[in-house]
Amino acid sequence: MRPTFRAFRHIALASSLLFGIASQHAMADDSGKITIMVGGITKLIYLPARLTEQLGYFKDEGLDVELLSQPAGVDAENELLAGAVQGVVGFYDHTIDLQTKGKEVKAIVVFGQVPGEVEMVSTKSADAIKSMADVKGKTLGVTGLGSSTSFLTQYLAGQHGIQSTEYTMLPVGADASFIAAIKQNRIDAGMTTEPTVSALEKSGEAKVLVDMRSVEGTKAALGGTYPASSLYVQAAWADAHKAQAAKLAHAFVRTMQFIHTHSAEEIAAKMPDDYQKDKTLYVSALKASLPMYTADGKMPADGPATVLKVLSAFNPSVKGKHVDLSKTYTNEFVSAK
Image 1 (cartoon, helix red, strand yellow):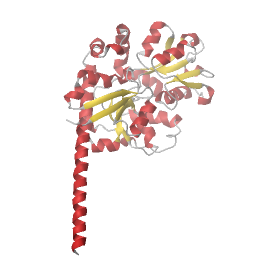
Image 2 (tube, one colour):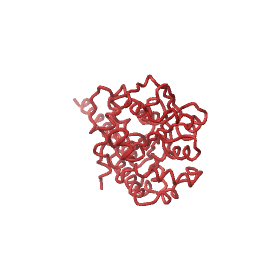
Image 3 (tube, helix red, strand yellow):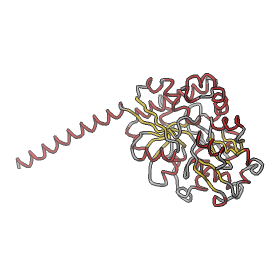
């Protein structure tokens, strides 16, 4: 019996040591670096990510945060699922799409109560395309196939009875690559954000066709608010790192309050110079974007249902599937004191 007892004692001791190491590792994770992938860090829809860093709010919370940039949100999502990053600043709709694929991801801070997206039409095509009812046979630019812009594009066209097979969607990215696609006549129209919108308007190369930078414009286009830019994480990470999640949320909520209590000029002054090569244009674009930001980081009450409606219409992963919207976001961390 003694060898058996001794063996059990060794097993218990080993288990205790392993538990202690695991606990230490978990605590180390809580105080270690957090890497966040941003779906295009210079886009104004994602401005809160860099602004929070510039204001020093991450450091105020005792956090070591690294921001990386990935032009398409769908690619940033893949980095999260692979465990390469702890969070993504991207569109909330990814959390719905991923739930239907058995992945639990939730938004813990909402930056944009509306998409901040604008369907721009090339000036050369403006006479032929007066609204989304005129896109049949045209080539429409999106950031990437399967991206949020592709589903929004399909929804806007679908409202006019135009099927996705009746036009071409071309992935052209954002910023300079989107502008190049317009200039080179590779697309007739396309969906993009600020400051690209203001740059194209200033150069006279494109005009606004559908404006989703404000609540009013978004409700007219989509029938309700459409929470978009947000910080989302894997649910398991949030459950295991509640202290970190709450600190992250608090840092971002401070930024949202800063945005709502300062002018576009004051906000722009906090941003890096390389984000605003044309400062006048940048401030103008920021002024046009201010209505889209939430004041408190919370999910708009009617938002998730609007997003689900859009995705259910054109996302094959979501169409006909049951989605528990309560698991796609939480206000727990932005409400924590």
